[in-house]
Image 1 (cartoon, rainbow, N blue to C red):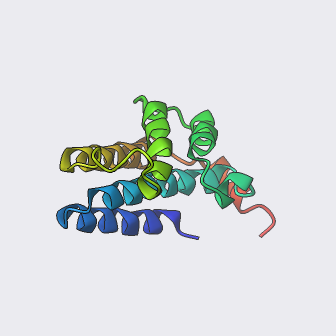
Image 2: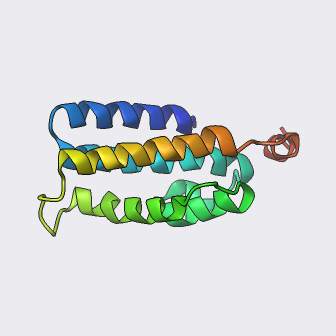
Length: 135
């Protein structure tokens, strides 16, 4: 599965929804994009991880961060995302928080995560050899 491509699709959906003023839905799709971006590296370093099957973004990030240190405080971003992944789908606290600025904050979180994936998570030849062992 190409998690990176799926993440890019979610980013495009989030932008479209943001432009349409559907900020709560844009936040949700931004959260999905962040999860998928993290899974792009998790699948490379732990291809059999059970975390690939769920939405446990905090532990997905921790597993990736074990291998690839981040120069930014992405754990707080991931925790924030975890909260609004559910809250944006089932807004028990109401929808007043879902403003244009709030959705843009999530878009920035996506960009920060993408920077981490693209620039700080360099897969080594050893990682690739482990990934394709036995094929």
